Length: 399
Image 1 (tube, helix red, strand yellow):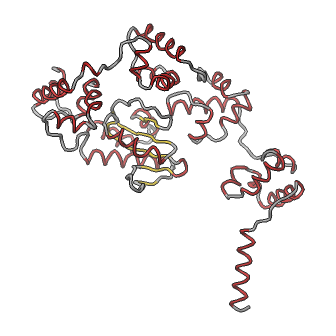
Image 2 (cartoon, helix red, strand yellow):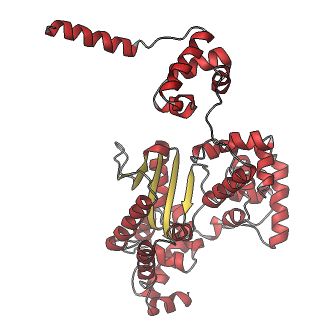
Image 3 (cartoon, rainbow, N blue to C red):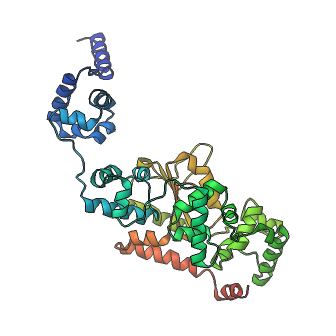
């Protein structure tokens, strides 16, 4: 066989590969399925066909039989799928809740990687709401009105004896109420005002002059420029929120007050690098395939990218740092899910069901049976705690 004949043969083979036989009738489809099943029963699995890009079979199954399950049954086979029991479904729903810390919607569990859970729940319990009830959760309210949202907020106010903060609503698992309030009224304070409740932070009580005066006073107490993480540790969220509402970032608030920003406001590079390396090792111990510092053109280098889930993880010593907001703004358009893994700090409210905060308690729980990783975790945490010496802590108490 000469070179020209070989070339023609290769070209013909490639064309046949591209021009895969198009199935036109039900009989032809059934013959194809039976033929493939003799090679491997994996061909009876919907997910497997998607993975190997046999979209022609999936398309014809819908066209001829109304769906893949019906097509496989017509060929005389039982579709390959996970056989969910009621107990497994309930346990899986509770597992999802423990990970994201709120009751998920049916569509969310698919994005979170729990393939088949919502379908199995509907098959076993009739619908997702019934499955949530069986798992011990209160179903999500789907049809909120302004009046219902205000009434629910006022009921919580009467129980607490004060206007609830956004974080308090989250602690009470009132994410649906919070989302409804933000949807109807734009901001949380507007939601509170509509319910005739006192707002949590009134900006007219924190003019720029007072913010700068307070920062200068704290500098005099410490003898140096205060770090943002130090104010978080002493629960001065009122000052932090006010400063970051008026100014683009913490450093600019310090500059406006005539102070010199600290280098490495949140932590030193060594501690941060140790924390980042620990998170990388934790992900590897969980057999998670990820990319470190994947470059997003014109945007930056997120700490972790998980291709299978299109998920980005940003690693922080302190989740209260203002850089977190900037990272969310930058990376959220480029992923299906964005997680902030942090050692300490106070997560803030964000109007997106794609953003999740993963704290030290949950991270520690994942590695509780791995002594090496757990020891590294405590070493880093203790090092950060010890950074505040007794003199500084005493000064904090005098504020």
